[in-house]
Length: 405
Ligand code: HEC
Ligand code: HEC
Image (cartoon, rainbow, N blue to C red; front, side, top):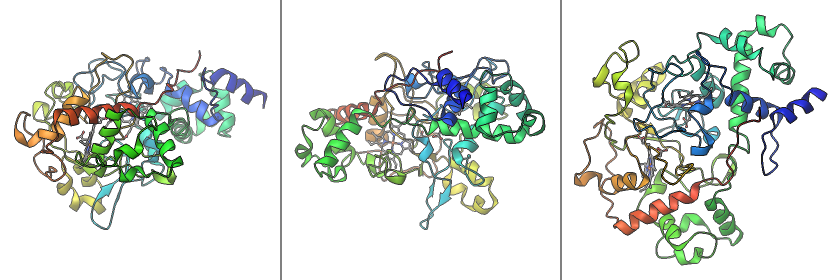
């Protein structure tokens, strides 16, 4: 017990609003921010998922993807947020043949064997383009020298010789700890201005699923400015955004998560600045000719789903829009989309509005491109701006701080 108290003193972040982390969440937090788990040392999960940018890249990376622990190595996609990812179901196909769920842009952390969030957390340490550890034992060897090693062992009820004899088991508990932290209240506070509005609307028995430009006035005075409210109304109507970034409650009745977890090919152009194109052939044998297959590659690798692979080429999972505009300073450049092609929300909205009218490079993948819900929406510049204004209300107000040393 004394140990647990000491642990919470050591690990509890200076969390201004007094949100205590459970012991497992606190362990997960310590590991998430700990830079010892890479080869060479220096890269943590937070190096690519920083709370100050909405749990994505901590620096403007115009090429999209981030550098790994080895400076010349880059992944091929932009880091998505880890906040609100914990509600993602496992990868599945519904009666209509639509795929949903699974983590990573392409769903390859399927969750078929275990919790998808824990499955995902097992990947980065061993990815040569990310934290680059040679094997699970290397992680356990570092963990046992960490200041929280004893606490880890006690909390997960591991035998004293688990470090030597059960490294696979220990490794999985590391992933479970990370999953616990990423599902914590600290990472998922639901305290954006939108959330305050959402709660106020519910108290007044107003259903935001019914909001349209012609009735938005009923929602005035609940915390959103008129332009933001107009953006929400358009989001749910002419903009068609809520057809994928849904406004319905999330699994278990959470406030909206702004994703139905399905997959789509929006026809994003290739990002010529993606450093992955110039990676050594050991990591990218196709060089400049590499095309991101998205969900296709995940399905092709699962025998029971392989016959549906081609129909899902180029599709990526609908991301949450929570914290999409979270940034440390107004002039901090964030990139958007799986390959980071877009550098502003304004550009992304213009793409939805006018993709099919020319003015954008051709799609990276032509097959399976969605031509029904986007491409020529007929939004005015003022309506585009309202949509952007609305998305800016989705930033959480509490920003998690790294654990104190
Ligand atoms: C070098 C940068 C980098 C590091 C380090 C890193 N990630 Fe990521 N993370 C990414 C990228 C890039 C993706 C998307 C990759 C893809 O879709 O193929 C991703 C995806 C994810 C996702 C999936 C989110 C979703 O919506 O699908 C989670 C969760 C996540 N990372 C958590 C972690 C954890 C936990 C760690 C530490 C163990 C970590 N990441 C370390 C770059 C990084
Ligand atoms: C047909 C489904 C669908 C519709 C409709 C839709 N989106 Fe998306 N959205 C997606 C998918 C899928 C992605 C990821 C695409 C990719 O990276 O290839 C995405 C990505 C985004 C991103 C980038 C998020 C990030 O973290 O990089 C923003 C911003 C966005 N959408 C806003 C909107 C807005 C605003 C609308 C309405 C004008 C809208 N979306 C309509 C499916 C949709």
